Image (cartoon, rainbow, N blue to C red; front, top):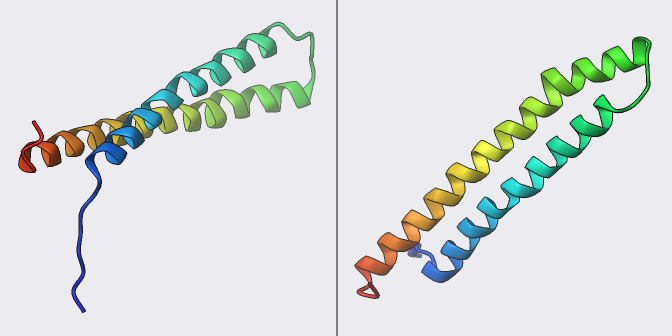
Length: 90
């Protein structure tokens, strides 16, 4: 049994654009939660713990997700362009 590898260039480019578009959504979550948290009157150990988790874990994880979406999106778009060049579409 032979295995065939490949991708549909248009679909691959669409995936890349979709991944990159998610960056704005994640930036919005970061901005919204940070703004609301900073504007919330809340003191005590629970606040301190949530603030520490937000600053050290959640924001970091979301920022890494943005970086991953950006890199993967760029890679998909570049591969799509390369495929189209090889296939003579460009």
